[in-house]
Image 1 (cartoon, rainbow, N blue to C red):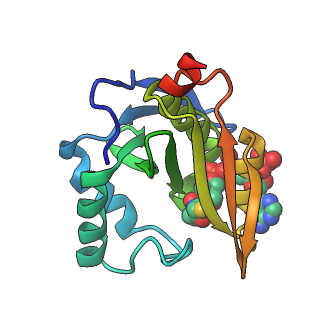
Image 2 (image 1 turned 60 degrees about the vertical axis):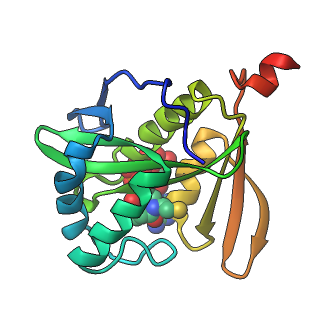
Length: 177
Ligand SMILES: CC(C)(COP(=O)(O)OP(=O)(O)OC[C@H]1O[C@@H](n2cnc3c(N)ncnc32)[C@H](O)[C@@H]1OP(=O)(O)O)[C@@H](O)C(=O)NCCC(=O)NCCS
């Protein structure tokens, strides 16, 4: 299942809390190498459910698989990719979200801003619900997701599932209701 191809994401500029201007655009195939570069230097590796993978061959394999089944937003600082947000459909109405922000750009509001943009994009793509799974120990991720309005729906072991029902959803289901 893939996201509808007619939904588009218009590039936007965002400001971090430190006043840096970043550009957010939808991922295209041309972005593969700069994205691999971001993950090559990403630390710590395997921080979120074993991701990102620890070395370039496995990073490239992972991203190659992802690009076939998901759509993604990238935050750029000039020519450098500094964050990656992924939307991976799990049903007609629901999409799974995950996000990675390079360590040089954390804790300045980028994760929260990019998550908001990804949720808005999921809405435009026609999804009514966004799900994610995260470790209960990942306090930064939990804080970002709560800022955006996600709520814990269940927990299992050291992980929890969170869900956001998109307000004013433009999904076919919501429009038909
Ligand atoms: C989780 C992640 C995406 C957050 O990105 P970010 O750009 O740092 O997010 P923001 O700056 O918007 O917000 C982070 C919030 O967590 C808080 N935070 C950071 N570390 C924290 C900690 N150890 N304990 C509690 N809060 C923490 C920050 O203060 C900030 O809160 P605030 O906005 O209220 O001040 C980023 O840390 C990351 O990529 N981590 C590695 C990959 C990952 O875990 N992805 C999530 C997969 S589920």
